[in-house]
Amino acid sequence: MSLYYKEYGDLEAPLILFLHGGGVSGWMWDEQIQYFTHYHCIVPDLPEHGKTGGERHFSVKGSAEQFIQLIEVRAKGKKVIVVGFSLGAQIIIQMLSIKPNIADFAVINSALARPVLNGRKLLRSTIKLSFPLIKKRWFSKLQAKTLYVSRDDFEKYYEESCRMRLDTLLRVLDENMSFEIPAEFSQVKGKILVTVGEREKAAMKKSVKELVEVNSNCTAVMLQGMGHGAPLGMPQFFNQMVEKWISEGELLPGCQLIKNPLESFY
Image (cartoon, rainbow, N blue to C red):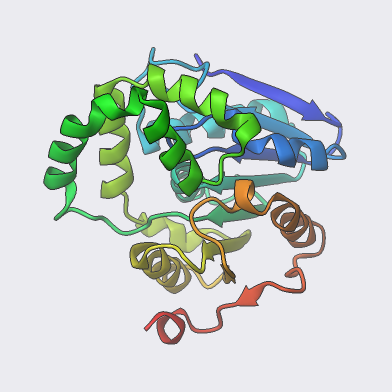
């Protein structure tokens, strides 16, 4: 499968698959691994990220197919929960669309689910010009701050940023910005929690609206005061929210339920 992953916790318990965002790797879930010791946790590095490397070019669909295979091999009939952040959340949407019964519960955090086609050419040009800055510590510190990367994790983040190739970065950004919700997502029957930070960009908030419109099993939640990076920025709250959702199918007190995304965002 050419996929690097680690397993933690109780191998006999329900399985949780954690999928990280672009530009980081499985270490972003360290706080979750420490919390969910009573679950069978699997934490992979996405293709062209971390220790998985670039043997296979990254794509959302290709990654989704790989993770479906991984679940089928490791779950062995157990309850399955999938949790994804940003790029990882897009992969979860794709996984559920390919195989609607692959998971009993899904947590989709900060997923861009509508194409940003007009800005892709401009962004590609900007990235090509600014790419050398990635290897500058001061620039990486600015980027890390937007993702809530802690001081303890910064060296890992910086090391992986320095190893990132330009063609990989452009490929990941293209996949991220061209992603749209597959029609088959409407067929997913499991319980789906869709979260977005209060301080995230409008496109992220509009994505929540579209996910809820496509599948009525989606429950939408606004995370107050949070930008892009809830698992790192508010890990204790995030962990408790996920556990409440998967153990009881209910929201943690303090979650701001978005009853009508259209009214809430406009």
